[in-house]
Image (cartoon, rainbow, N blue to C red):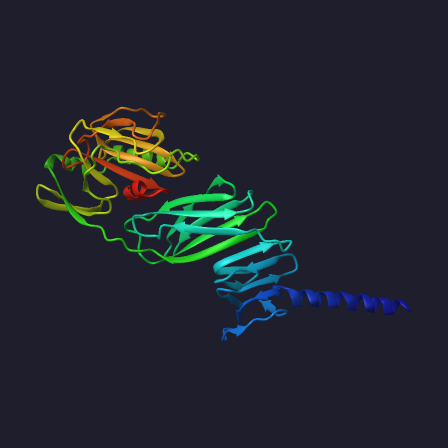
Amino acid sequence: MSRKFFKLLFFITIFIILQWNILCADKYFVIDVTGKVLLLRNGKSYTSLNEKEVIAEGDLVKTYRDSVIILKDEDNFYKLYPYSTVRIEKAPVLVYGKLSKSGSGNFTGLRFYFTPGPAQGKTMKVVLRSKADDLNVSAHISNKKGYRNKLIFYSLGNGTYRALTGFDVETPPVKYNLNIKIVTKNGNFSEIIYPFYLKKTVYGKGKVYLSEDKVDLLADSEQKREEIRTLSQVLSSPSEEALWEKSFVYPVKDPVIISRFGKKRNYYIENIFRFTRFHRGSDFKGERGDPVFSPNKGEVVFTGMRITTGNTIVIDHGQGVFSLFFHLNSINVKNGDRVEKSERIGEVGSTGLVEASHLHWGLLVNGVYVDPSDWIRSLF
C-alpha cells in the first residue's frame, strides 16, 4: 500500500476517535435496571427507562420504591437507589434520595436513620451504619432560604457513626434537607439528600418582672461583649469523646420547673413592658444555698461571674453537648475538673438578671439550645 493511503487511514482513525469522544462526552450508559425507572428528557413527560439506553446531560432519572439503576461513564459506575432522583450534568447530581459512585462497580453499603422526628426546640440524633470503617463523613442540614447547620459525625465503632444536633425554638417550621456524603479512601462516595419538614412545637407564654436596679444589666458594654466572646470560644471546642453515660438527671433535688424551656416571655421593669425573649433553658425552683448537681459526667470548662447570667458554670459532656448553669449563689468546682453524674457543683442563687432566686439549666447541642428535659426522658 502507498504512503498516501496510510496517511489517509491515520487521519480517518483520528477523526473517528475524536467523533467518538464527542459522542460519548457527558453520556452515561445504563448497565442495569431493576423495577420501574423513569426518564425525563427535554422537559417532556416521563417515559420508562430500559437497559442499553444512553443518558445525556440535561436528563432527569427517577426511581420508585422497588427500583434501582446503575449507570456507567468512561471511568466510574453510579448507583441510584429507591425513592431517588438524579439530574445529569457533567456528572450525576443528586436531587434527593441516595446516590453512590464506584470505580469498580462494588458499592459501599450505607444505612442511616434519625430520631426523634425533627421539631422546634428538640434534639435530633442521626446514625450512619456501614461495613466500611475508613469513612470520611461530611453532613449538614439546609433549606432554600439560606439556613445551614453543619453536622459532625463521631465514630462509635463497628462501622457506626453518630451526629447530634438541635433546632432552635425560632427555626421556621418549613422544608429542610438532610445532606450526608461519605467518601472512602479509594475515592468512592455515597451521597444522601433526605427532605423533611420541621414540626412546629407549641410552647407557653410567660411574664418576668424585674426591679429598676436591673436596668443597667441590660445595657451594652465592652465587658458584656467580651463575656460573649469568651463563652463562644469555650463552646466552640467540645471534647471529641462522649463523656456522658446513659440518661441525664435533674440538677436539683425534688425538681419543680417554674419556667419551662421554649416559653415566649415578656419582660417588665417597674410594670412597664421592655422586651420579649424566648426562654432557652429550664428554670427550677430553689432557695439561695440549695445544692446544684451535675446532670451527667463531663468536664468543667467555664466558671465565673457574668453580667446577665451571674455566677455561671459550663460543663462539656463531649461531642458538642454542653450544660450551662446560671444565677448561682456559689461555685464549688473549677475549670478542668472532671465531674460525675449527680456530683455537687454549686448552689442556687439570684445573681445576674433575675426576678428571684432559682436555677437556670440550659443544654446546648451542636451550637443550638434544646429542651433539657428530653435528655432526662430519652437516650441519645
